[in-house]
Length: 305
Length: 273
Image (cartoon, rainbow over all chains, first blue to last red; front, side, top):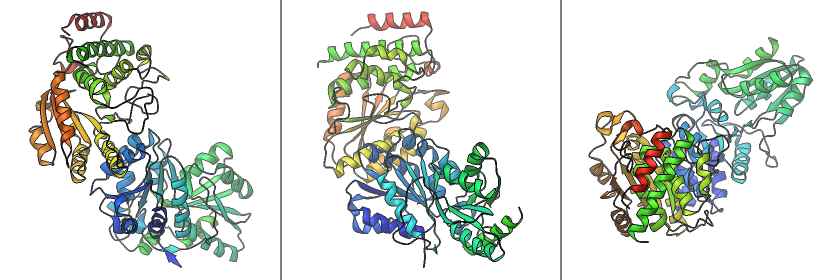
């Protein structure tokens, strides 16, 4: 089944609406971010802030000061990008209990093009002290991540996608902030992926197996705090690491993995992601292919070691 | 509290400001002195607060959106009994409870962390919306700078406060006319500032920001306004109370040296109460 992580966000919010502390803010994108699902069941705790992302984040901070649990949503480019300094100074500096659920991350935004495709948001968000950064791989994990974010006290950035992607987890899946997930075990290489690239990493592992290469596949849904222990463990077991993300290779998952390994266990790492380039218009599928965010490229990269 | 008593306290607050900034050897005395009478009136006369229980749920809140005048807020909070006055000398020092800009995690009585200009009104709106949801009738006071309203986010927030009919927001604009690079007129003209707020749907009250009776009356008037937020445009003098600092943009962010400190304290103390 293919479902977008933003769909799961809307469903999670509807379930969370029973909690009277939950308030939801949006910046005129409620239908796209799926916060409109919450508005439908709980209009009194839904606040449209208009096309004013900086004010939305500041308002969310004020709600949090008053004991509410605000979820603020817009596209990732406008949340992490436009409102960066509001997130830094009004939310993270005082460690307020604000959740920023940013949808339409990465190039799979598609036809809207490069202006709307956030490829730096993980980098921006993980550099802020006190911030937790989550990047779920499918709808089941997205829902679990939203519930975990609501339980956790403090700022959380949740990266969500526009496009429908395969469901990898079943309903019994247990999600824990900061704990990576081993989806497949192999001795030859570790493929560490995040977000929608986890499904492609699994496909690549299947193809590699047919060629006699056994890959470990790790899902890093929590970019920060990152699961150092697991990353070091799989690097030790395989000696070769490939990271895969729908994000710039500067500052994202690949960088975070290198920060761990360079200090704990120097290991050769190959990074798959956007190579210091903006996206452009196109279908999500064409864009993923154009930028090498494909099963084939993961296979080729593994074989190039 | 009568006006004479309030003025006596404002004098002590001004002394606290000068002492703290001088001890820190950095900070913002000019704007701190211009807002001193406003903050003194609010914390000693108008606001429902309890220094024994700074987080009391039903208290009035204050967001110092022009966060660089933290010395004025700290001076008032210390005078009001939130923490010992000796602590004022630790302003801006390593591990101090008194950070260069207000930090709600460090200082009792600080309701919101601020400092990056333009962000405080949005946070105040969040508090005001939350109060409405909870059916609480406390007020949220927001101190804005005249240079600060050049920030676009202020106008996003001004629109939101009006859209959501936040009559529990009382903003006070400390209109001293000066910012770092010079006068508002030279740097970036903000006028007609009253018409701008009116056009955004706000109630506007204009007063002399050093007339404590006028401040008190304006707050009472603001409290009676229904269905819309109020801004009190308070005309003030930057550096008020220390003649060599008055109306000098150069005293925006400069600390007095030892001689200047002594002269300033002497002048404040002999000043008319």
